[in-house]
Image (cartoon, rainbow, N blue to C red; front, side, top):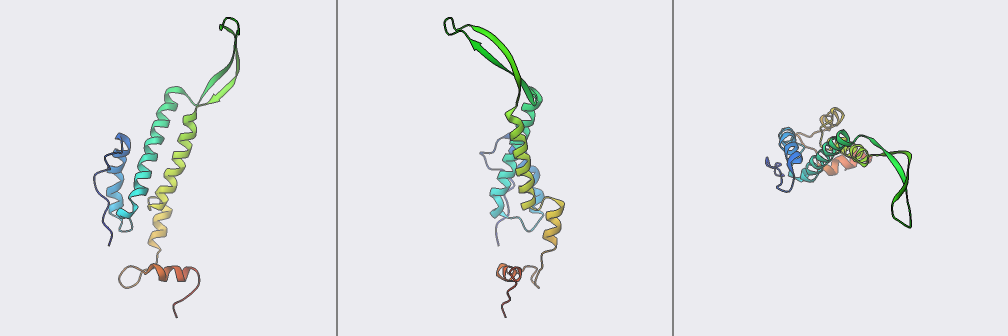
Length: 147
């Protein structure tokens, strides 16, 4: 049997990711499907959560878009000759927020943290020991039996 996830987060995780570790690991430990083998997924979840929060803070501070200008500089003096509005530029943090949110959703599903994934985990077939051999599950999935 695999070890449980440790209660304490890895030292290299920073403040927000460490906080998420302390919130999520107790939930995951209550589920027998998640073990120390899933540590990388848990770390990725926590790191993506931190990236999402930092991107959100950046958007709150700097906005989703900002005005962009085309600046013309005199080749002789190096002074700005004109500064013409050319439209709006998207804050790169919006892309980070979008990407990290999608990653969190995918990882949460892998860890059984979404209602659908929990439902799928509960529907897994069990033998008399409460666990089914992975080989048996794969053979059933591909329509082959041991007989």
